[in-house]
Length: 321
Picture 1 (tube, one colour):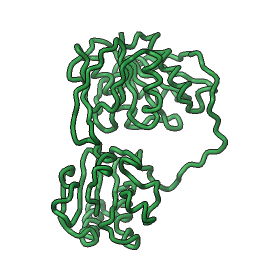
Picture 2: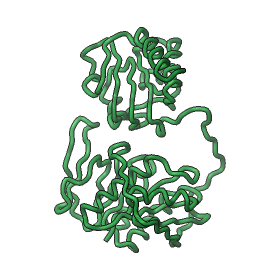
Picture 3: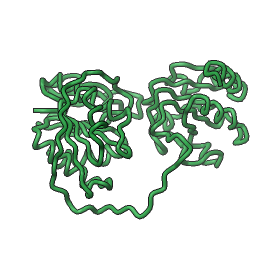
Picture 4: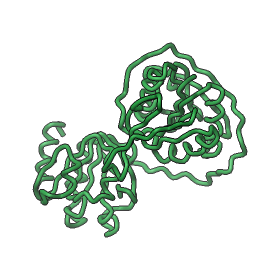
């Protein structure tokens, strides 16, 4: 019996998200009295794969092949399910990002498994198997019992601390039965010179409290000092002040950075649904009763246009920039 965890790679490299998943799977395996096995799909060098052993993976299964150079949900799900059966995995763990959300249901169907989506903690108990997750856009929590023999879980990003538990390195190259790929890529255009929202550890976001697109310079400057990505609320992108690629919230990008600055954002339910996974939220708003302050760990009641320059000055001094 084992816990199988699917780790994504980005151009052959793992990010914090991958190590977070392995750490979670390792702790879950301890609860079940089993071992954590990581499965990587796509071309990844052994030196990069070996990093997964530092977070408690007892074995790393690498699946390569031309058919896996393109992310095809059906193909990836079939490969993960095949490995799960071979390794007698009773729990399969994926990330609760766009890729995990697309693949996990397919894996669950193939394994006749119950699905726990967006869990944010280790199970409350393993017998019965009860998982803990946020519901109602993060306004409540629920304990959900999964009764199937095999369970599939997707882990909310930035919800589990990395652990250090180095095990002997075992890398296994696996051959799986691939299915005809239905996805083709005709062109790839990558964003350059800008930190992607979904990858950023720090995000600086502005709302209507910024009053005008002409007032955005200090916010962008603060993001540059902190090495952060910039974001905005939906009204801002709808008004055309900022691009829709920066829109965070229930109808935009759902993110979970370590630090989220909500500047001039009131904190509507739809916005909070997209950023509630943030580890720390710093809110700046003139309205002391704004909903954002209920979600924030730190708050400043004041005009964003007056507070921002002082923040920029303070961080420049701290960072020596």
